[in-house]
Image (cartoon, rainbow, N blue to C red):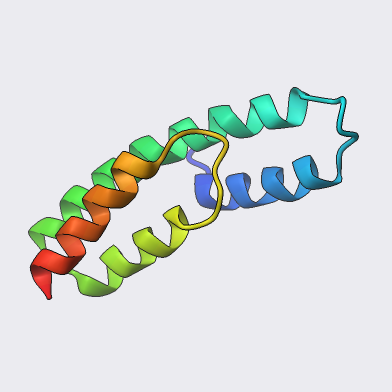
Length: 87
């Protein structure tokens, strides 16, 4: 079953923010969902770049802007590069 990982990540971020600070389970779960989402973003970046889709590139950049529990800086830079290249 395909699920909307973007929405799952958003929900887990909200839950992790509300969870007790000593409960690291939510943060660990969030990290796993973020890894999965990052893989999907890689594919979406390829498609958006091939199609020169400025809206999709900006959407990906916006999604990568908040703080993630995993390192997304290289992906954020790749999306920004593709976005600037297409401008």
